[in-house]
Image (cartoon, rainbow, N blue to C red):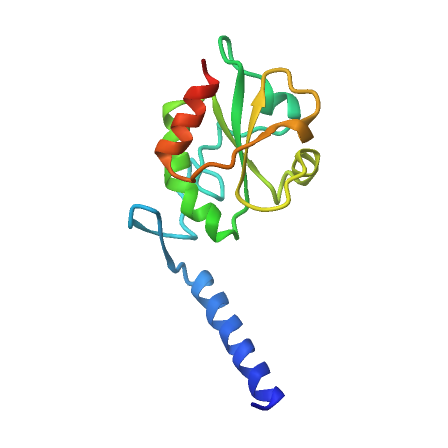
Length: 158
């Protein structure tokens, strides 16, 4: 196959993917529910997580409310398909545990993302209360569904 044909196919594929995203193409979550990757309620930030449940500093990300011993922190971006897939489970967890679960937009909080050493999205960390060195926060490596996240959070809330 000639080089120009391969280049034309790659360009066509990239255009197709870009136009699908711009047009609000539907995304399926792990439960098979469909939602628009570009739609958000007015009370949410660009990833669809509640605005009140975000943090801007290491202290905010690790400072628990009274009785809390830390927080579960999600680093995400608006353009990440995997972030869109975890969104329904994460929103449910945030609603149930608003003082324990927070989100950080890696595009707008680049300095904080760098302090945690985030290299990919979505990234989830357990930040114990009083964390001074974010690079040693515990990296969550479990499944990205509500029950697994809830079980992990409950193991830390003890």
